[in-house]
Amino acid sequence: MGIISERLKKIRTENGLTQKELAEKIGVALSVIGDIESNRRPPSKKTALKLSQFFNTPLEMWIDESDITEYRNKRGKYAMLDEVISKLIKSNMIINGEPTQEAWELIKKALSIDLKFINLNQKEGD
Image (cartoon, rainbow, N blue to C red; front, side, top):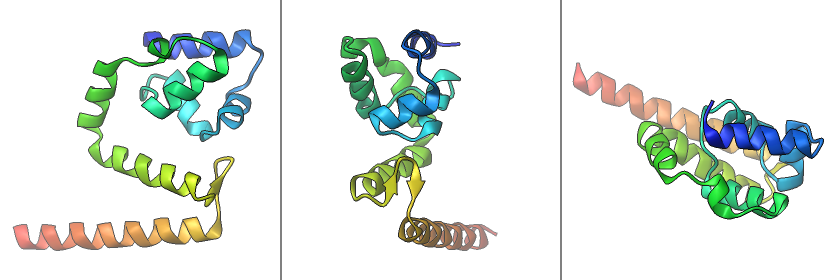
């Protein structure tokens, strides 16, 4: 387990919060907290800022630039998806981690377009 994941789990449990409660209080999806605590991903800078403000801790406690860089290099597409989800949250199309029907339709359409693009690229490579 990484230092940030250990730190988050410790401070969350010391404050008597479940992952779901923390996610709701800072306005992120439950999966974000779970992914950070299980060391599947580092907190984004936005999430790090939210954690820092919520727990009244220094921002540096939640940011490891090398982890973020490595994660984004390995998971470029995932980082783009994170941006889309952030935009949907900002436009109130995802509320408390629950996408509206309109958000689902946009996500499905985007996936459909990406899959068609991938399929075309594979056929051209044959």
